[in-house]
Image (cartoon, rainbow, N blue to C red; front, side, top):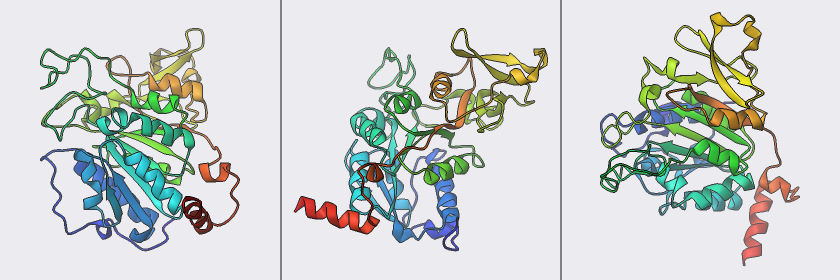
Length: 325
């Protein structure tokens, strides 16, 4: 619901947007402005919190309130902001290092508490700001200044991490998909509780092509699966492939739709099923399409509600401050 008549440019600032040419952050910023305008809340009611890294420039480029915090602590600061003033829309932005390495502990607890904040993980599978060290999400074999012989560590899967932490809303988008990403961000905002969105992006300087065809708009239909609740899991340029859940083996399998005796065999996406969400979280290229969209979403008591507070949001903030004094 648009509360105010706003346009994306209303959320721009006088700061020159400066990322490397071709960086996916430009596309994510564009999508974010579109979503904020559609939501229609006053910029005075919105806060962006970021840690350290390329993604952490976000608060400078949006005409909302913002905090540029220290490395890995953005989720903790975002939690404090929301508890102090629950009336605010709080968005927490971080990279794969910020959220999955030094800030992994804070990310975990923000998700399990289910406080009503939105966590956006910009995953480019590298430490870009500090010149290309491998990160927790870098693929095995990644050569970098900190792994000249190639990384030997299996990468963290952010979606599996979020589901394991008890997140009630988990989604994934990609920087280049400008008609799809805003839909995912809008769903995250509408969720009442902690929302976790992994945004796959390409670092053109230090990890170009790390995600293969996912970020290639001409190839992404073959490399990704666009999830829609209540719809069959179909993908491919010709919509000629699908996913079937093998109950005996407890895993998804890719099938050619023309080879099926009954098209109803294609699994229907149910974002309320944790078991299916876990199965989707394990799907990776090149053997499977990478699921994009809302992977898991269920209603659950939001943190403040779960504590039995029945007053107004502003009363909550005052009571918390009194408790600290």
